[in-house]
Image (cartoon, rainbow, N blue to C red; front, side, top):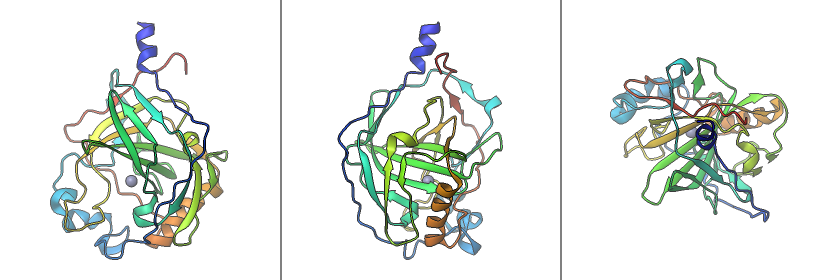
Length: 266
Ligand SMILES: [Zn+2]
């Protein structure tokens, strides 16, 4: 049984040695997104502005994860193949930090998902037992079949994170340099649930808040210094005019929140 638990917790970080440069074309803030994070186009109005599915959906994100209601289970193995160090361009488009995975991918079970977008929300969108964190990073991946898998990493204030080699600035676009591996918690326990994208999206003519995402929320946060967190807040202000870029938590409805078992080796 102990071995089973250890296997269930096995997550591997594949770390390469050759840095690569990734440059994404910056396109600036969305020109006419039809939504924002404040006033009468803010999150409280998305359900009216984009009823399908921001208002009428039943598997919306983010959520408050109540740990006493989670289901302990063996989740498929999650392996991070974040094997390049990245220089990326922050274009402030939906807080986007990277638009091209360039070989970074994860596997969940046997399915491979290519990283194609990293972005940030301040404060965190997901909460754990009602606790909100100052920052949440979203690593958005897509499989060849078009399935979307988002890995959410919560960030608390503390020691500086070595993965932030150069943080975002307020310029349009700004260059940032991350070591992606350092942005993933060393403790790999995680929550998993089916949900939606947490914005109406860049194209108002398509379905908003589509319920297409397999969510992985890492159970334990990473730490960044207050200055590093503030850089992400400032990048939100540069685009949206507010550092509050988090959608409020949504009803869980009939969903199960799965959690991987406690690892005796962690
Ligand atoms: Zn997001």
